[in-house]
Length: 118
Length: 129
Image 1: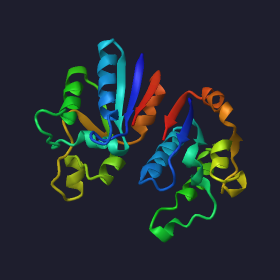
Image 2: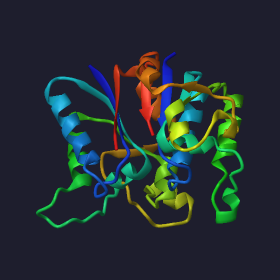
Image 3: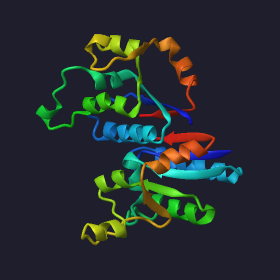
Image 4: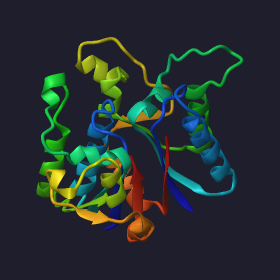
């Protein structure tokens, strides 16, 4: 078993990109690997509460994140500074997350075997 | 060393696909093994058989086809990403009652499990684009 960290940096609804990344996340979890997610930069918006994507005809990707628990994807990390720079706090997010300071991100990444950029 | 490579960018969106090709060629020339190249997101556009750029430009899909022929590199295109973007191999298009046969030589279509397997058996996983 390898430890995977998926690093998501793009904002919500960047075309079909996030859906396709989540497909890899779910496939990796289905292979019984250890899967974690790190949200950086505009990636933190993925978990923002009160999204109404159906108003603009988009898919509700936040609900896929909420379903990750079923696949044993329990570790979701969020970079603290990315939240702060966008006026958000952990309380604005729809999932419980582990917040990590920017200075500790490199150390966090070292704990994984495979980093998947997204 | 054994490498798994993922290509996410289309030929004309950025240089990432070409950089991947150059990286793979250099790795093979240095005696490394490329276990698999997985084309995902807009990277699947590398596998279109009938891309017809002018003669004096890079011929992306035929470059990959030649690489597969010379080094038996396993070039895998993600089926869901491909179907979303209208790339159908002959089997799939027959199943859908269509006539397309878009997949360039040397590529094969398969699922995301092939990507995960490649990351598990390889020493390094390198993503372009």
